[in-house]
Length: 525
Image (cartoon, rainbow, N blue to C red; front, side, top):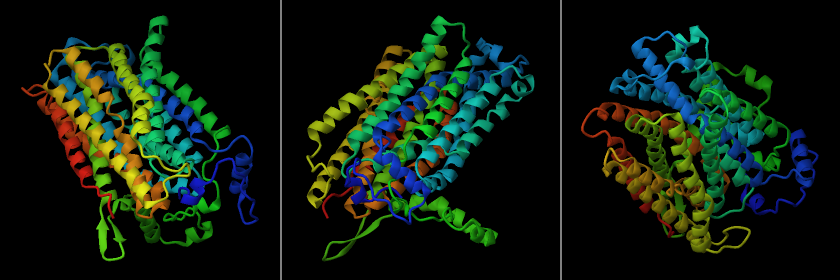
């Protein structure tokens, strides 16, 4: 499990005593904490930056792959994908719809597998540490990029079956948890190293690093194309090389954040810590039961809690409402991949132009998360003791602040999507301008994460916050199972009709409902 409240308030530089009952992992962690390798949020910054940069570098190239596979599937071309060019026929509504369905299939497959593996990997991390989960997640990213290399390469047998073979990528990444596990372990690692109270500022900084990495990726790709003779699909090779270096950093330099055996006393529903001989003796039915419990147990974190105020017994729905708002926010965020397809098809952008557009959005998100939002947090955030929010009054103030910050971010993003939908369809300027406005709504993610953590802490369940981030990862995976059927199908059905921007109305409506749920969160009592 993530660290307890007392452990969180303890200074990181304080050496911990050695207990004879501790295992080898505990000894290793203490040796590092006594030396220069103590856990700190700064350690996770290179991982977030590099992983995001590698993903941002190949985002436009992936869309190019979807388009070319769609084109080949329609016109029956036999040349390999890397040398084929998009012709006028491939810009037809049929080709565009097929490309969006390929993208939706990849997202759906990966999300289904991620929803099943996220809870298991999160609980494994609570028992064995965060470091191994980082390794698993990066390995999944590398496997996905490798499949794109094979699909976009010169192997005729694979090129002819690209529409089917490309689905191997999301299978491999989904088993490793995908972005759900990666985001969950990042938040859990930062949670391990920070005190109680609102974590909006530190979560915002981490999300800012994600945005900077995603922005730098397409920019770096554009510079490479300008000064070299590299092809678009060379980016997949560079991405794999970068992530292999990152994996080396995690294995040999990155310190573990769980600092004692007590920090890892989480439930072990799949028998990670059980004796192997005992596990071998279990029947298949018992193993299936363990797996089922491990699969569904993370989501139970969002159940309503019983609160006794000394006079009466009530149900508190704060965490449930936050989970509902987070789920709608996750689904609404899935409009962005389809939005990139829409921009490329509507304005005839090539992969370089699309990459620069995405870089602009991520740069603005980074500015918001690293500069604008921290200023807002510093000015309006309630002042609490350095060891974290301790009194009921200070916890209530922290909770109210995160609630309002999340409401404001989601409301502004809903407005940005609505303005995109209402602007002239032929105006690139209006589309880019309102897209830039949506980049300044990126505080919703860190605010919702912090709101959930403070809500649990306020109810006396602060020790379960580590499970919360794993559960958010499961919500993310489930949301991405549902969202392709919402946005990709809506886009393909309305693309050639009178309302091609219906997807933006849908995203705006989901966010407005999320804001309504957040207004129902109660602070008193």
